[in-house]
Length: 369
Ligand code: DAH
Image 1 (tube, protein in one colour):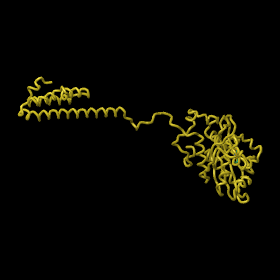
Image 2: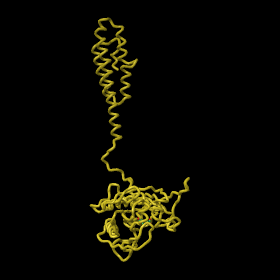
Image 3: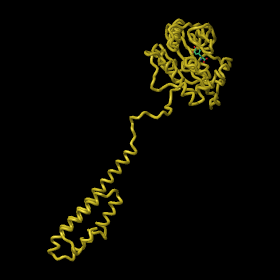
Image 4: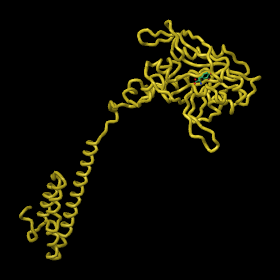
């Protein structure tokens, strides 16, 4: 501090010099600590400005009248300059912090795995799309079913060996003695639909089904897509036409040769299994060419007993039904050989076979694009 400035030698000139000196030092202070040092030196209890203020008391009234306003002004100017400088430091600090923490939202997302649609979900969407285009509605039913819906209404007689064919998971009997079960096929949704809806019915349903079975081509939980048409006049030729149109759209081939082999299902009469022509050479299955046949679904004309069990008159109504294994058809289309991998929850598998959530199946551009 200027040695000339003290309580005894105070003068107007000195006050101005002191003001310039303090303001210059305030403006030159580099950080909060330096600014605080100047403040203490000027306005602190022992500070030079505070010291000068105290000299007012020893002045003559005339002197005081001149020096009072000058010293007040000095004190206010210095305080103001300190506040302004302090605010500037705070603002600079905030800006530096924001700059340091800035996130550039225009940068591409890190190449972390971003999730994928499971091939089963994808294939069910494709199937729903194809049948939707052919006028089928989508129905639903629960995984836990009654014995009636899963078997009895579908014309499986009590104690009939066909029930054993299904390797059913049963629950413990309830208070009424009835055992619920995990549905062994999606066919009970046929029953549910007929019970709640008047014909004409043209529906598919999709979902999980369960059987006690486990190897490379069987998993205890698997998926089916079921179709049902009930009307006053339907034929096996309608069934064949719908299924051929489906196979062409699903496998994205222009021509496909199918054959219907007689089979037995309790709920259809006549019943058939449908095979598609395929080529198995080179360890791969190619649909629509070659000399082999591959079974892909079961179907038939709905048994009159089923129609009657669901409260409809079989003299008036008849129809056709079909059921296919989604997992199997997914494996065929997308080259996934072992069914067990589908449900192993291995993210590497899903990364390889999964689908981008942004690419939805569409009929216009080809179902799988
Ligand atoms: N429910 C049969 C099964 O899981 C598949 C099936 C066959 C469904 C023929 C049908 C059908 O609707 O008509 O083995």
